Length: 521
Image (cartoon, rainbow, N blue to C red; front, top):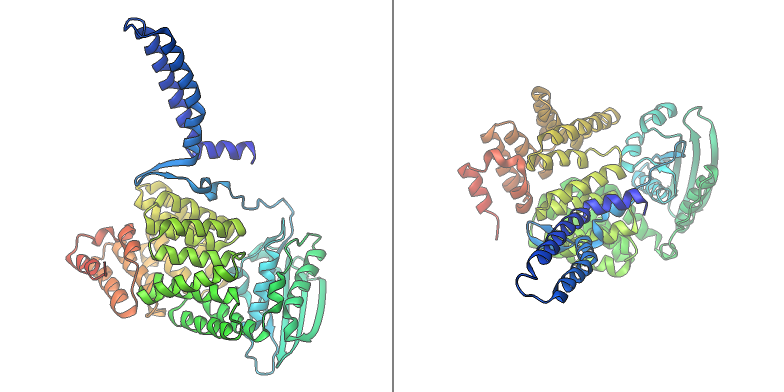
């Protein structure tokens, strides 16, 4: 750890504060002993003993300050010393290579393999994310250009990357033809290209070959090879798994159900497919958190995440799914342990940082949640959710200045996303909050109304509508949205609702008390 990082850790854990306080108190005690012991007839060796005890206690006090922290819930062990403070997210060297992986074009006879094309691109993207000193545009940003004939130079400018990987897939039965090319965004020249004519069972080899070829072309080292166990997965199971990923990425109620169906079909073919089990766990965790907080979803999230951990403990996604499940069951200690394991396995896993932050909000530890959301924002530089949630937490902590500061950062990210994809309803929905905090009430209400009309059965969007109109002072409208979200659309999290400062304007209303009372104990 660098000296600056160590100093930051010492301040973060209040070790320096404890050291200064201990020295002052120890000095006062020795002064009192020197003045009073002789007058009280206490033997002279007692003063020597006091000095020795004070000196011996100093390192012990520092160790305890390092290992434990004082919280509103009492003194607790500080596991891993707050992993967000000791985990390094790459500071890319100036001039370091950067790349965006676009979803491959579907050239199949029926044009029904878009999910497969996206899946291949995502797997290559994930492999490249493990390359040291290579900046990779996230799936969310790069996939905005899928199916669009955007100019390569424009893509490079908007995503701030030097090269783009693009390609196509022709899939007919078990036969695959995959073409891939690496293009320089500044001049449009091809740096590398290749065509693969293989069987479906060779898909993992192809993905690894492409990732290695890109690493070679960019003169960087791909040190994390494909896991051998993945090579043995039945191609048909993997096909269903990719379908599940495609649905799950949309984060709507119905697509969440479709994703679970696809993951379960993958498991039927390959019962020990750990990634598919983690996928199922994710869908139950998401549904419990956002759509339907039922015991069935909670129990299934725990069961399937346990199975994912059993089959694939080396995958960060297994531990993230377990962290979400334990959070929903209010086992916050175990949830924290699982998220920290996930981050230890993959410090660049955005979901690990983001959902760890949400878990801390559920727990009521808002200060820790702020740090975790900040790490999520660093891992995914174009993400707006983790930034705007910080504004909400700063408001809850009565730090209005900080709330405005991060809101300005958040709306910049939202506008950048909407420039790439004007149909991003989630960006418009959350962006409405940023505009409202910045005093742009007219545009804010337009954005919120549009997002709610576009997704009338999306509980996340509708719940956010309740928060928005509460902040805007429209109490009745806010309560209408909250009741609609709870009764007609899908259940919401009681813990999140209780800690959500956006609802402060409606908490004293009798209808709000009725809503809270409707939650099962």
